[in-house]
Length: 103
Image (cartoon, rainbow, N blue to C red; front, side, top):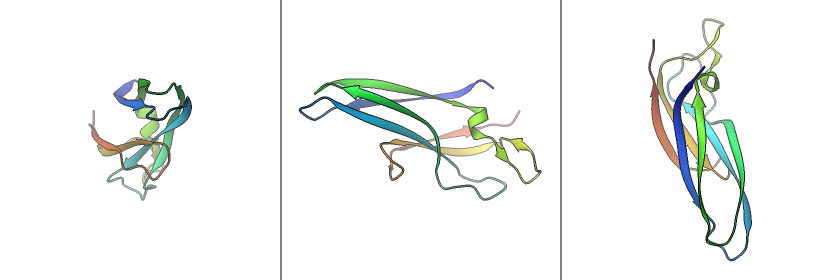
């Protein structure tokens, strides 16, 4: 399954020392046919930045990352709205929205 949408964020080390951060990407399926978790961890990137350094970090959302066991007892994705959240942990509120369209 190909890429649906690229997700890019810019991260900056605002500190005075080199630091390592783990960026976590969560997906929330807004209206699925079955109850889904509020946030599902789908990917992560560990990066190390020097003081003051900025770096763009990219994630790929592919349809297989949106699949789940539907009410039809099939492993598949459903069209609809999804929220993507990226941060250092699951409490992040940094979000964007995308829509998966049906064929």
